[in-house]
Every structure is written in C-alpha cells, then in structure tokens.
Length: 430
Image (cartoon, rainbow, N blue to C red):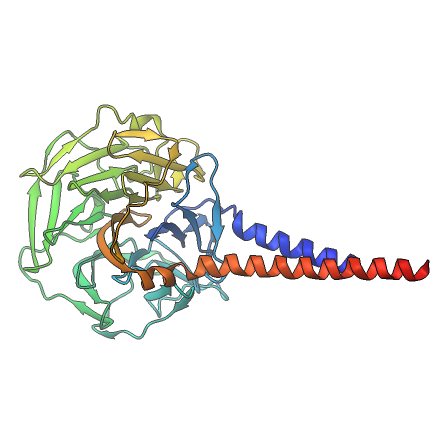
C-alpha cells in the first residue's frame, strides 16, 4: 500500500509540474499563437545557459499578468538550443517553422549550423528536420521572417556568425525565401535599389504584399538605422523602395518588438541602444495608411511607466498585445513578467479577458491576428479552420486531459480494490 501511495504521489506531482509550469526567465526567444495558445520556444536563460522547453499560455481563459498559468508540453522539447532565431506559423495553422539563430547541439553543447530549419507539428507534438532543396543559404542569426498567403517565407539580411571563438561576423542584404509547400530555398536575384546590409530589424507584411522593415543595425559600421528611414519590399514585384516617415521622433533601437494591427498600424515596443541602454519612447505607432507613413507617440499609453526591456517578444491576439520575457535594463535582470496593452483603448492593462466566442451556423471560423518573434518579427496572417482541423489542433490538449482522467481513474479503482481487500482481511481475522 505504501508503494502505491508513493507512486500516486509521484504521478500527481508530475501532472502538476506540467499543468503548473514555472518557466525560467529568458530573452531572444520566439513566441507564436496557434488557435488560442501562446507558445513560447527557444531563447537564452542567461549568457551561459539556454533552454529547450516548449510551453504555452491558454488565451481562452481570463488571467492577470501577475498570476499566470503556464502549461508545459511534455513531448514538445526542442531538438536543439537556439536563440536569435525566427519562428513562423505555416498556412495550415499548426506547423511552426523555426529558422536560423545561434544553434547548439543539445548533447555536445557545440555550435552546429548543419540544419537551419526545424519544423514542429502542433497537432501531434513532433519536431522534425525537413528535407529542403534549392539554393544554399549561409547560416543566419538576428533575422525576422514573414509569410505570405501562398506560404512563402521571406527572410532579409541578418547576421552570419559561425566562428564563435573569434566572433567574426558578416551582415547581409540579400532576400531569401522558403517556399513551404515545396520546401525550397531561393535567393532572389535582385540587383537594383538594394538596401544596406541589415539585421535586428522588425518586419511587418501589409495586406498589399509590401514588407515594412524598421530599425536594427546596418552597414559594415554596424550603426543603428534611423527609425524614419523605412525599407519597403514588394513581394509581388520583387522590388525594393524606401520611404522617409514623418511624425514624432523615435530613438534609434534594435532588439525591439513589433506587431501589425488590423487597422494598418505597426506598434513597436522596447529595444535598446547599441550600448544596451534604454530608449524613448517605450511604445510608438507607425501609421501605414498615411503617405508617407507617420510616427505617433501615444499620449495616453503611459508606456514609459513600464520597465525598459529588450530581446522580448510581442504577439497580437484580437485587441491585446501580449509582451513576454526579455531583459530588464532597469534591474539588469532577465524578465519573467507578461505585459498587456489594449490597442483599442491605447492603455496598459493588468487583466486579460478572452473575447466572446462568435455564434455561427457555418462549419468554419476565421481568426485574424498578428504574431511576433522575440526579436521583433511581425507577421500578419488570416487562416480559416474547418471543424475537423480544429479538432486535430486540440488533440494535444485533449489527449493530455484524457490521460490525466484515465490515470486518476485507474488509481481510484486500485485504491478501492485495496480498501476492499483490507476490509475482507480484517473480517476474516475476526
């Protein structure tokens, strides 16, 4: 009986550790939204420690940012360590493409750039190394990717650092694409109007097919880009153009985040100077509906009351911007907090309430949102999910719930039988 109780206690402890997961602080991670799950993956726990756990925050339930219920995905462990990578959700809305970054072998802890792309199937909780054909792309870090409606991921420039001993690095200005339906790499042949080499920018894909690149480091001098000097890439014409934005002055920065709202605003948050000091303002809005684009510092956002952080991630879920982790410049500590910004009221809030589920007579539902990687990638996507697809996407959560119920049921049966046996033995003795 003692061993049975001990075993039950162990299983309950294991289940509790999954459902009440306390994730380590981190920066330079990635975050994506699949259905109503905000998934956190990869990142750097400190300057000498990395992390590979995959976990999520349930956005179908209310919470406040001081009382979070993270859930660990037991079979979701990344096959590698990586940070300064980019993560994009595919058109199927359950495949995550994890690309680039500073990649380490989990067993040897040596840097290993032999594979640049890893995919995670959310519906079955499985990581794979896909077979990719096409052009040979040098390893990249400090990149951001966006995906268009045909499933093509665009990755501009970035840093190439493979000699981590001498820490020699190159900065690129090429445009590479990954065609996810055919899994084909391609370096676009563009010779006119090329921008300077650039990394640690933010990238936002507008509905008209234009990618907006803001900020980061550029050129061989590794200087920060003027935030009003906007790079534009037309994915239809495969052409570069440039725009001088107007409006309020925004401090130069890198390692910041951005999200694209349904109204066409690009909202940036955080970041730092090249000396890793704070920037002002914390939050600013670029209106892409104006010509030229216009920067505005929101008068009622009170964003400067928040700590100065960089290397965080930001995701848009309906009218909420959800900012996670990063490095706190004010305290010189890795951040474990989550910050919430309401784009409708333009205010920072502490409580999250999921929007009401729309009533529909159709078997399909549409979700529109924007997600951002940890270092500033912003990708806009609209996906339509059939009833069967939605059921498969929830398989992981449902499977976990069924497992818990089955395990507890077995324990109750065993415990009941043991108690009956004890009663019979006692009756027999009498």
